[in-house]
Length: 477
Image (cartoon, rainbow, N blue to C red; front, top):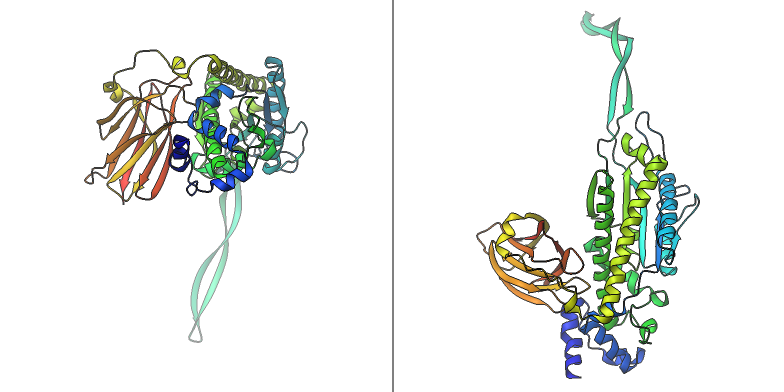
């Protein structure tokens, strides 16, 4: 029991949550029996138990954005179809629901709306949570500010005045003489957007507090992914200190799964030949993504104020192609989730790790760099802890600081890989580079980095793969 007490007091706090130290054990005993606390801690200690008990994908929520009096974006450029986003999203979501019910008959696919009604973002999130959704897919259409154009349509007569002055009784008097001129006549119009294509969005990493609220606020509607034999699961208190630590695990899992599905959707749409903008996070956040206690993505199917995109997302062929692409990605996602679940029940985690020979870390310069975040620090020496993000799937990384290898071929787990990083004060920016030696059993290679700058904590969700390194830039105040 000494080991468990130690983990409760220190490791859980440092590894998973930012709450005060977990020193109110007596409070926990009033809410859950001692054996329940023991079982919960085992979930925290052995993250593989999450994989072993993870439920297969059984409920998908499909949301048609906007609706009713909220039309969303409207085609407004000259000669547009004047289409409304709420109609496009409803049409595509209906086709997506039909496609998923056809391809995944054993999965309960639930639309948030099937008619032209208004639902607030809060209502949409509540529907998803109350229906026990395990995946939330939101359909939208994009837009942007339109520039104003003008063109000459003829001429018109305009009266102007010639001004002269003369003295009358020692006073200066202004005399205006009218005359006619012919000037061009213009008409003004809204020019169409040049930008076109599809993008996929996930909840922003800096909005994790809202995602945690969705998880901890789930109450009886939130089912802990544990083995059926674990009777404490549905009665577990997520608002207790240990409960919040557990919620953090789910939050990071949701982030990774959301990013994984979003990447698959982007790949499937790319196969159709459409322009894509990859996986994105909105700085201000997207309510329905961060308020749902499940993995969640939002698909911007096209730009309603771009002529080509507007025709595409209003056509039967375009809507069906978009629905089929998203459905194909969800089928891949489900197969991956179900495969991971099934494999974990009978195969040790170490056996699921990719067996390919690690690539030499000296090749890192041959990959492009993806700058993930810039962090402004006050100290020249900081500690950096690296974890696998959510599910431990055998991700292996090497780390370079300003080109120097400071960590070589190490496997990410639920236990921290701790680095003491000494920054070069003569550099405006110090570059910490994450090189993916492999991508684990669930590509890409993803992890959580916690940087301690004195008493200030910074969290970075990083991603790297065989094409790109993940880079964090440290600047000094």
